[in-house]
Length: 362
Ligand code: ATP
Ligand code: MG
Image (cartoon, rainbow, N blue to C red; front, side, top):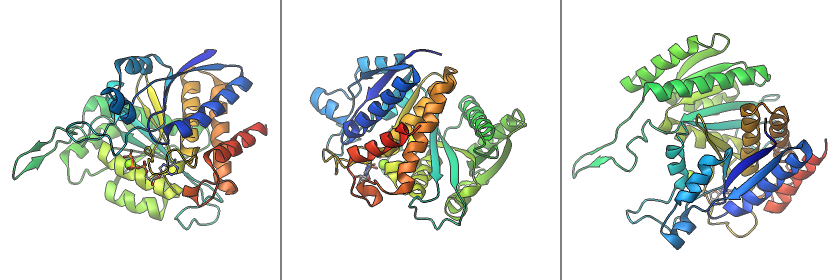
């Protein structure tokens, strides 16, 4: 347990600063009440920074991120700014690699009252977590694929070391959710083991890991069937764990189920570091107008609190994380103060103020 937490803050591009400010304010508000404190350090990085300086992620920012207790990131990248080879500026991916953040955690939740494209049967809630391996898989050769005139190749890489870490993480999460009464305690390995040997290998490592967690159930699903079930019976899932590319696709599907990117949080977690950021990008089309939805960023902040709390054995932080999540979810469910992406007319400030108001009620 510590009294002061050092948080690295990447405000990034586009709507980044607009959604970061209310999040930092909410976290400070909770800390003031809980008797602990944050030192927030703004670190430059991103597309606008690259346009200005020719560097997208300065060494000093990387160092600051490495030394922090946790990292908050809003959004980086702009369609108008690119590296000379034409690829997008995405320091968030560099951070993931440099800090070895192998577990991409994407919670998917739908609760009574929430607007969703699904026709939810009465009394059903959706509350599951998708864990996407984020350092290898089909992204392994990202940007380095072999392309000749008549052929192109990319490699799918699955390693035992990363898979074991990933599955350990998934089973521990299912166990924690079970203990908190939020799930039955089950991990589903999502793969394509019927077609690819690499996925059969992935599944074998999963099955071996499952034996080490006798109190947590385990099963398998093919990724194509999983896509179907995301729409047909998403309330059946607890913790899902999958390869990088499959996770990339399913996490957008998950955000769609929830009602949009503006409410979809995420965390990228490794052994020693973690980055908390919304699933969405920098939304340059609405930047500077004060209308971006801050809830995905705020919910990512709530995930940071829970992670810090568990890591530092700080029950008040875990409780604050849950409290903040519930406050943000309450705003979504009540539907009274919604930003444009959710069909409302509220500004970023108004949506954030609604969360603060919900928090102020003890
Ligand atoms: P990236 O490649 O970085 O993921 P993207 O091209 O997928 O970016 P986003 O920046 O995520 O695009 O934006 C997609 C759409 O969703 C845009 O129309 C944007 O305005 C909208 N959007 C994204 N985030 C928010 C938000 N927080 N509030 C409101 N609208 C948002
Ligand atoms: Mg995107």
